[in-house]
Image 1 (cartoon, rainbow, N blue to C red):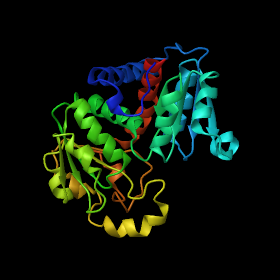
Image 2 (image 1 turned 60 degrees about the vertical axis):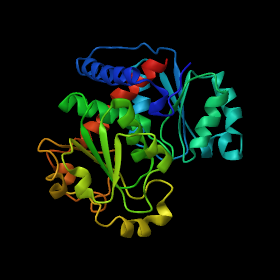
Image 3 (image 1 turned 90 degrees about the horizontal axis):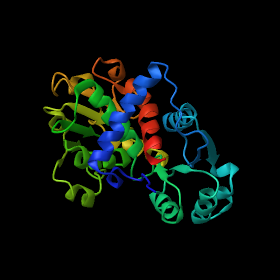
Length: 296
């Protein structure tokens, strides 16, 4: 029994296999091939935070694989009345086959996984967003081949997406430059564990010779009260078409979405031919199907 709380929970070979399988499943779906290995299987999705891509990808993915998905939020379940997550883990382990949790508290995931007897997927926490990285790696590979040895730039907040890119640099063997304002850098201990990651202050320095440029919103879920302060702190860190011009000529741009046009990206960036954000979003379906298939 395996769980997926972090990219570091799997080997590089396993991750590459899931990314390859995601593209295979994508081709099969487009060809109209019916593939339902998860008949009779049920996924319980516990979401404390709102979601579009993650939720739709899991629900649609389970349906296409022949299984079933149940959406559970804290307001309509006993979690909202104070039931310990460990108790929920024991109950759900006897009823469903796999669980995905989206939470602002990464420790909740760890508590669930410690007592559950079924696989758990991190559908996003305040620490990591590993499902998004599977789709990102799939998207890059479909456009440019293997990301191994490539140069990647992450511009913006050193939060869960940035942390996951640090883990991805280790697992997929690419070089990563991170440009963050002072006070918003990723965890120093995480950086020290990875020699392929470089922290810089200027976005222009980060994107030099980059094959992939990535950003995320400046105010993630849980940071709503800090929005004004963050907008001021991140001035100068907006990704624009002009900033992409400083990268390699065949650079790709990705954003996990939703995007705040006029803040972390310029108004026109998602329409730039170098942006693959829409395909990246669509690949959430295929990569999460590959993950579900692998775990079950």
